[in-house]
Amino acid sequence: MQKSPLQIARQAYQPKMPKALQGAVRLVEGEKTNSVADQEEIKKLFPNTYGLPVITMEPVEKGQSDDVQCTKEAFNVGVILSGGQAPGGHNVISGLYDGLKALNPKNKLYGFLGGPSGLIDGKYQELTGEIIDEYRNTGGFDIIGSGRTKLEETWQFDNGIEICKQLGIKAVVIIGGDDSNTNACVLAEYYLQKQCGIQVIGCPKTIDGDLKNEMIETSFGFDTACKTYAELIGNIQRDANSAKKYWHFIRLMGRSASHIALECALQSQPNICLISEEVEAKKMTLNEIVEDIVKVIVARANAGLNFGTILIPEGLIEFIPAMRVLIQELNDMLAANEEFTSLDGDDAKREYVKSKLTPASCDLYRSLPKGIARQLTLDRDPHGNVMVSQIETEKLLIEMVQKRLAVLKANGEYKGKFSALNHFFGYEGRCAMPSNFDADYCYSIGVTATHLIAAGKTGYMSLVRNLTKPAAEWIAGGVPITMMMNMERRNGKMKPVIQKALVELDGAPFKYLEAHRAEWADANTSYIYPGPIQYYGPTEVCDQPTHTLLLERGK
Ligand code: FBP
Image (cartoon, rainbow, N blue to C red; front, side, top):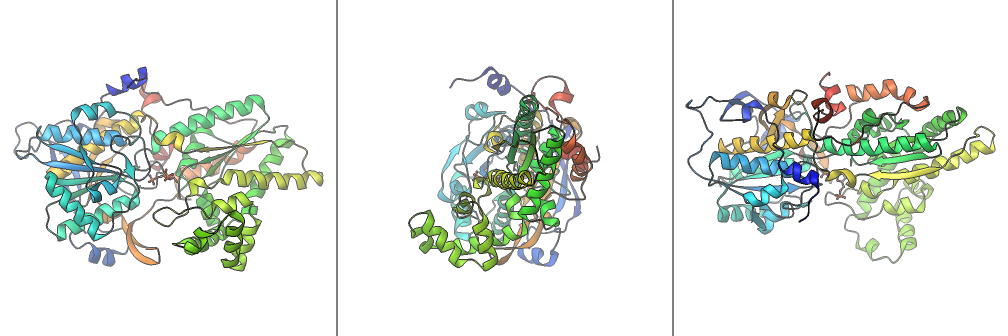
């Protein structure tokens, strides 16, 4: 396989690690924990994994009695990549591999293929040193593939036992987001109840940045994805400021939370950045959002600036209260609806949908451009959610802004020129070559997971924190997954789930945006051009964490 010079150089990059992980480690147990909410219910559902202590790993001097660096018995581990790609996944796996081999060269790592379904269907591959070396510090999940199959039924868990027994697997590592880690915890609990001797460890992945809490400072992949998008936004802003003739409407991935849009705004200072959580809190309508955008466009036009950039979080549409109701009605109506799928053509489907909606939702549905309305009825994901990545909210906003400006122009209230271009950045960043931060963070997450396994832990998420400090000062350990859980309604039933972290409107990152956005909107230009991710050079250029992380940690 041909490689670029950078690919070759990155293959040789040795990730930086916390001091504690550089040799033998000792696991120190802290206080017993409680779930973030609904403690009684969670305790009842997870009698074996509830209340476990947080673990911290400390370095051990050679020769000390609790030196666990070299375990006598060899053991095997299985790994699963779950959900959307995120830069650094391959480094979690290489950290896991190196960690296992350091404990005992006879240890083996198996990759389950194509996501959780690999465990259920018994599809796997042994990951040898040769394979691992090909994937060190690379983006993507292609080493074993990923998938969105939900691991939640006992027959699936039992299939897992079978295959693990066949392969002599002592632990399964699940690399995934909030839902996959919730399922990891359910699996850990089930395996303890069955006393089958299989441990389960989770790792925090998602570019969306919404798997974070008191313990997990950030999910991996967020750093690289945001830096990749921010570079592109900066390039567009330079172009906008050079040509001075286009408004760029840029939608950014993030299924639900607006962390990516917010982080990109902090890095690039666009004229407008919408935040879904704010839209919801202020109960804004689509027309009110459009009105806010139009005000900025008119003000800039009055100053002779007929160009600008607008960041739009992918999940926006679901945070507009009336749209949420409409989407919920569509979700319920489309769930296993064969009558709908059997209809021929868009017009027949549109008429069918209109006949089933409540009057308010029907009015809203009819007011949407036909293309957007159709996108709202496309297939749902395995969780029954609308796939927001396929809804072109940026085009919807352009169309609505255009119409409003035409009215203002006719009334003599707007004299500018409006020419808009639309962009969607999502897949461009999900498999980018991991930044040094993600390469280092992920590798440490993998090594940490091996120590948790060697110590017999289960129901834990591999934890690496203190991330605003140099990697040597990072703190490794484990956090019980039950600690992050609460009860939420899913598909009509109350279920234990890891609490999703949305953008906090009283949090430092949003406060920073709020304090500066008027100046970014009006000014001739406040744009920042972040440039591409740098892998080699001064640490202030190459190793910086996200603004979100720095602001959240009071830096
Ligand atoms: P995860 O939560 O699984 O990490 O995936 C995140 C994400 O990239 C979202 O930002 C996006 O909405 C979604 O995946 C797209 O999914 P798909 O890969 O199925 O198109």
